[in-house]
Image 1 (cartoon, rainbow over the protein chains, first blue to last red):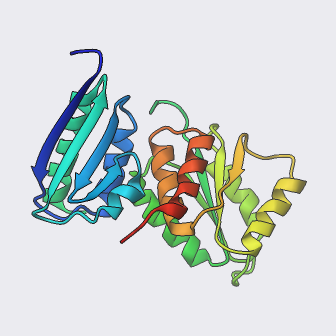
Image 2: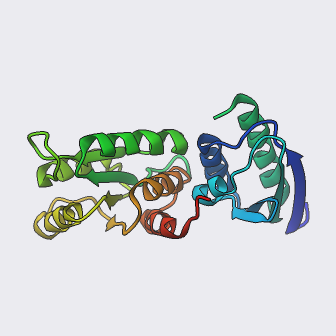
Image 3: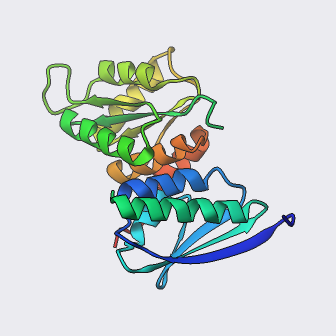
Length: 92
Length: 134
């Protein structure tokens, strides 16, 4: 791994992004050194802010872009993608 | 980070139901790892606030990393201020958030769950004022 890198991955949501998964994303994002950002359409949110993540209003079928920049960017993005996949499958 | 004590949250409301419901919601969104204590209503169960209830809630919420208090409206703030001014037995550090009640409680709880200190939890609660929900 380079000292610092930037990773961007886009996924399509299988379900709506509810309040509980937004909380899981925010708690998980805070554990990384990298800055993590979620983008849905024209809206962007700092993944550490649960209210900003909920404010994205992301629904089933929408594309979410996860972008992380920092020393643990790849791990951060993978963690976010896993939570998004799991949460939107089960529902919140 | 997760092995250390987490900042506790105290919700002070005129209504016991409002305080408890908000605690339940924030606890669910935050993943259930943060101590959230409530002080809702008067000592005899009416709408109002109680210094004794706030004092008990502070003791329940304090896990050693300090406590952030969220008052709902008006005299909740006065009751909290009166307690902070007169009591010598308070969690340390302690802070009162100037924040919307529900959004502030959720943001504060999530930040506490992530291992944030009192300053970070307070900021998260107060930034909730600027969060758009639409």
